[in-house]
Image (cartoon, rainbow, N blue to C red; front, side):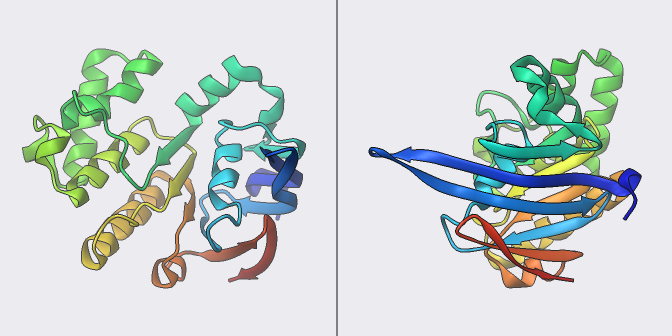
Length: 230
């Protein structure tokens, strides 16, 4: 694949955390490339490094060794202010337990990323309304998260993650707290919206069915890439 086609490039990536008096490796010498627009599932047992990898890609954590390149830029060299701007502009993050702000309505939760970017108010309102319509929640826009079902909350979270049109979408067990049918609907919605946006999607899951609906499956074990399934 040519450099212009690569969305994510990892070279010799390593990350360890303190455990008592020792350092426990979580990611070890990870090499990986993901194409622009590709949808990739990350599989592995708990503690295999999947969530840590997403945090490194988002610039939430800094690598101890190696480099993380996103869209041709080494995010390890951005510094904290640069990483904050990178996350706001280029990354959409979706969590297992939604992470919506309880005191904000669905509409206000979706508007928040655009407000942080300083998008003009009428444009921000239109974009948030469009996303809520696409996730099927126009009628619930003024409801608070506590009045929404789990599936509806995750749809709001997807709209919030995509409203600023990120190039990279990171999803950490986005269906893990949903029943099977709702999870399947939410996963298909996420995949479709990312395809429409042209965004690269990396999704952590324990679901083999969900994993194999993606373009590729990468399996991690003890922080190392052990298999790649097309």
